[in-house]
Every structure is written in structure tokens, then in C-alpha cells.
Length: 180
Ligand SMILES: [Cu+2]
Picture 1 (cartoon, rainbow, N blue to C red):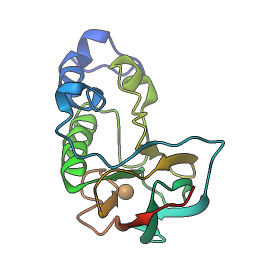
Picture 2 (cartoon, rainbow, N blue to C red):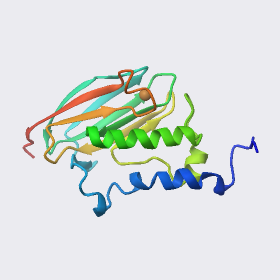
Picture 3 (cartoon, rainbow, N blue to C red):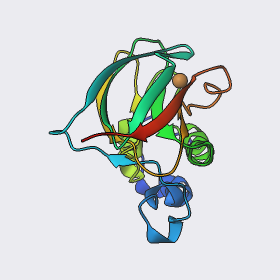
């Protein structure tokens, strides 16, 4: 059966919902084996503001250096023609995120250039992880992040299927403790 309405019966998204269990559990103690690399930052204590341009298939800038404990506000703009993601993480978390994104693509929540918020909503998956933003073309957003933990290198990646492989990633180097 093919449904042409923009909204679908909730039953249609039960399977993707189950697949997203792993992402919803990022803050779950059960998953505390995930590498610690920071948390959503305090918007009243921003140390640095960086504008990031996202397009096919790049981030500008694509190289960042921060101090441990520094709170950075990323002002994100998707100036491209495709849906793009800005996700801070480690190799491990990016890989996990990539799997979620593949599932979202399969479930019709993401097309090449459109975000189907209605479908994400139905699936209980609005994609508002603290460490990531998913942007439609021309969409802008902000992400405030405090870099902490033991990691010395992090990755900013777009996990829309195929994008990271095509070069849409940036490196983050975490240096000495930030003097607060
Ligand atoms: Cu992308």
C-alpha cells in the first residue's frame, strides 16, 4: 500500500523507532562506556563564537582547536542544496550516528534535500541530540558545546549517508585546560 498523505499511521514507523533506541540512550548510564567529549554548553558563558558554513560536501572552517573546558557557540548555516548535519563526536559516536541516519533515510524522514519533521515526530525522533544539528537547505541553527573529557581529537561530521565519505568532516583538536 502506498500512502500519499504527508502524515502516516503511527504503526508505520514502529520499526525505525526501535532502531533509534541506541541514540536516545546517549545519556543512559548503560551507555557510559561511550567516550566522554563534552556536553551542551551554558549559553550565558560562551567563550567563543564560530560561524560555520555547510555545503556540498564541506564544512568551513574544517579545522578547529579548542581548550579543554571551553564553551563554544557554533552558528551553523546550511548554504548548500542538500540536507546536512553538524555532529560533534568521536569516531565511535559518529559511526553510531551514521547508522541512525541510514535508518532515517530508509524510513523516509530524510530525503536528499528535505527533512520530514512530521515523520520524525511520529517516530519520536526529532533529532535534537545536544551534540548535533540536522539542517535543511538554507536552514540555520546554533549549537553550544563545552568541550571536556579525555579526548584530544574529535571529529565534526555530516552523517547524512555518503556525505562524510565524500569529505564532509572536520577535525577538532582539544588542547590545554581552559582558564575560566
Ligand atoms: Cu552533508
